[in-house]
Image 1 (cartoon, rainbow, N blue to C red):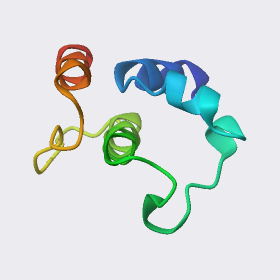
Image 2 (cartoon, rainbow, N blue to C red):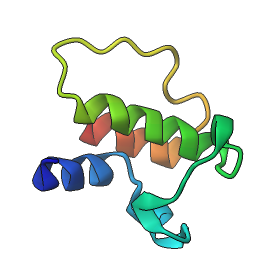
Image 3 (cartoon, rainbow, N blue to C red):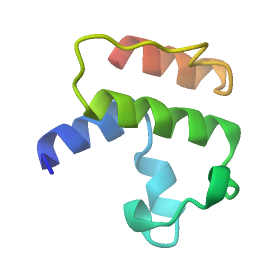
Image 4 (cartoon, rainbow, N blue to C red):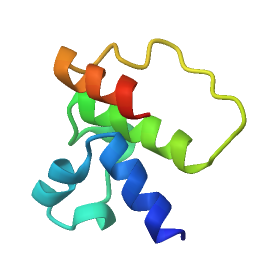
Length: 79
C-alpha cells in the first residue's frame, strides 16, 4: 500500500471525516451493497477506489449523482 497516495485520495474524495465516525475506520466492513453507508459515501468510496488505481482512463457514469453540491464541487476541483 502506498500510504502517501492513500492519504491524497482520502483527501481528494473528502472521506477523512467519514472514516473517523466508522467504528473501525478504514478497516470497517462496509457490508453487502454498502448498506450502512449513505449514497454519497458509497459514491465517494467508489471514486476513491478508482483514483487509487492510478489508471490512464476513468469511465464514470454520473459520479456526482449522490453527493451534495459542496462535496461535488470539492471532488471536481481536487480530483
